Image (tube, rainbow, N blue to C red):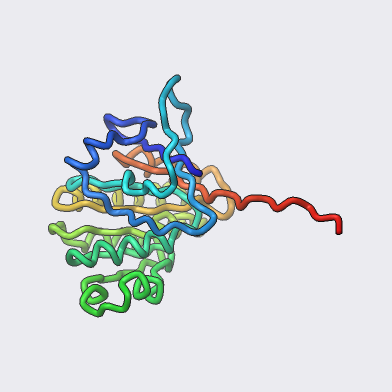
Length: 231
């Protein structure tokens, strides 16, 4: 069992209406969840009576629209699911990937694509190893009608060797470029909480959450406990 909740303009904390999904939204998340399941939650409280309980397999309800980028916040364990998604997108056409945390695993993508070279050849990957490179890659990504995926965007921004104010300035420019890209296409941006908690890390996460029109918060469901055996 799991919970999927969304934060979006016009849909705050509620399950997306099925009619709206089927008629207006193109789903991009495939139902390839880890065995222990994934729980999608919204951090804020819900209005009384709001139904947010959905089976974990109903991941088709996580969707993006052309002219919009979707934010996914969660642990790094969700990366295989996002890579499988990338392969699914490449079945339809070119996909641009900006990897901010060295998360792109070509073997995972190849398995999801079932080894089809025509699918793999449609994926272009650029890697950033500093927050300056992350901004440079987004600035150089053209706004064309091809989906984009940004993996672990905040990873390089957690580098405390760069002044906090400078990291916020660079992230603000990255968000401007995401808005530029979404005018011609749809996209997905994943972020993970910092391994070492800090005030600046929280502020960076809040910045990108405030900028996203639609966002999902993901938690891995804890495995069921087995009863203790005495003998």
